Image 1 (cartoon, rainbow, N blue to C red):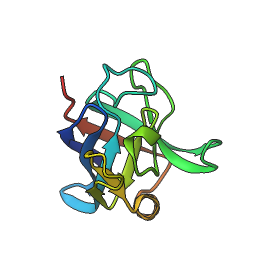
Image 2 (cartoon, helix red, strand yellow):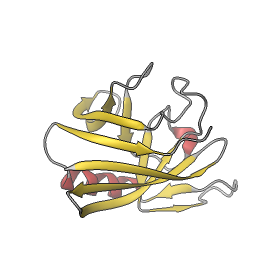
Image 3 (tube, rainbow, N blue to C red):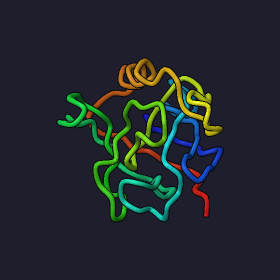
Image 4 (cartoon, helix red, strand yellow):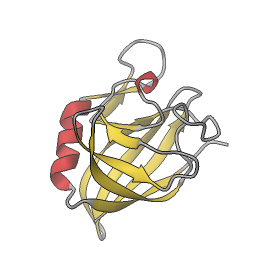
Length: 139
């Protein structure tokens, strides 16, 4: 099993994409993603660079639950996949949702049904570690 994020839209304050959980060529799960905008990989404010990363399913004392955390991101740590609706809620992390929509009327798409989507992601993913490949970073 492997996870892919293919980023598709880039705004100054937000990065939108699609997440796929794959078993070979079979799609087991897919959803929308929301990340902060590209700020040169700055801690807590930028999406991360494209690349391949290990993920570990670990307990988060901040969120009081186990979450997937990306590891070995150059100059970064504590990058979780968690619930959020708006990019400003993310401190360099990745939110998942059922669909992109402009929830707050600011002209920047957000994600909806984040909690339900994260629960589905956790149900379909197995084990304590996986690989993730992220494609697409604005320059």
